[in-house]
Image 1 (cartoon, rainbow, N blue to C red):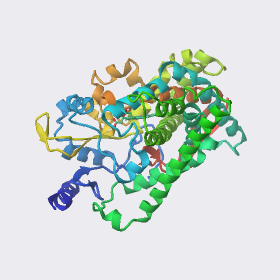
Image 2 (image 1 turned 90 degrees about the horizontal axis):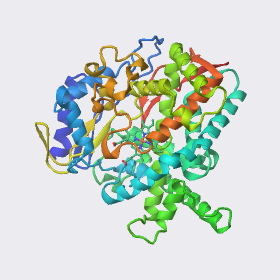
Image 3 (image 1 turned 135 degrees about the vertical axis):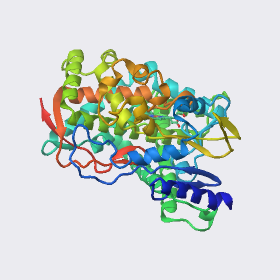
Image 4 (image 1 turned 120 degrees about the horizontal axis):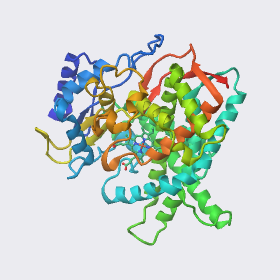
Length: 480
Ligand code: HEM
């Protein structure tokens, strides 16, 4: 009873005294965690160069970290964050995915632990790095061409880029990881998107443990249908791949992520073999993680360049200097220093993933604190990315020059101050993939268009699974 009632109310009371309203906590089967709802209403304010990045959120974040981040006193914060995320003694594993999140991610790479995680991580590392990543380059360029072709036919020159980048990033992950296309995988993306939004809107709701067995909400019923629908659709894609091999259309199962997973599921070597359920969960994980994050990163970067024409010109100069009017190539992409700075500053201001959480496995010491087992530790990257003690008083300004001498210099060698892709062994496996895809797309857009923000735009970054624009981002494109 203490866990069920007292703890959440105590948290709510403390938060209310800090001016935080709403239900900022949730109860997950005995473990309590406070989650900051990062949601601001449509402000409708005109934007200036020094607009507040998250107009209504900043004080809430400060209050939150004062209350719950107190254990991480400023000076020690980076060491403690590293200690949690490096997880050397396995004291801070991933939080258990339960309820809707479990339906969404299953037991894939994002949520699994131990030997299973290591086995799957090896496969994903191979599929998304080095030569494999290089071989994905033509598919990425091709997908951007398809998007730009669509733009030619759009009526007027105002384009809602969040929607466009959703299609682009879905197309890229479909082609590169699953050898299919956005159109072929469209129903999977639609189901995944519906399930994501159910997960997001239920993230702060309390359910008594076990009550779902007696009575299910509409969201629970719908999410079960979606979970089964996604499973059937993924199994169909796997079946198609196997059929193509049997019919002689393909020499073998292939070396893309899907091919590697199917081969692993058929392996005679038990240490390499994965189950069909694992295969389905992993496909689901990459359909989700592989596009929504890159999508928001691209959207906010285009938004920032649209309101900072000086940096847009700088980026275009660099792109034209490296590629001229030719399509991007892997060696040239590695030379785009200004673009790298711009993307980093965009990730600092609008990190697609605003916080990372871990579970305390058994009673553990963290700095001066002794943490009880089964609570969650939440690390708010958004707060760190907006901390004036690290970045200076101009935190809300878009200043890519901060990264001129690299991330280490920008953060004063404090790597736990900027980690949009996570830190430690569980760092993002798609980091290089996302960066390459974003640089290709931005280069090809800058080669063809100058762009500015439409007066129709309303600034309202919203936290669903990623930090997305609630009303989209409308941009006006002018052909060069
Ligand atoms: C801008 C784009 C992206 C951002 C900001 C991002 C962010 C992150 C973060 C912060 C984590 C660590 C989570 C944690 O420690 O709990 C993570 C993990 C992960 N990301 Fe990404 N990600 C991006 C793109 C991608 C892409 C394109 C893919 C797939 C191709 C991907 C797949 C994954 C996977 C599978 C994990 C779990 C890795 C593990 O636990 O071993 N991500 N990502």
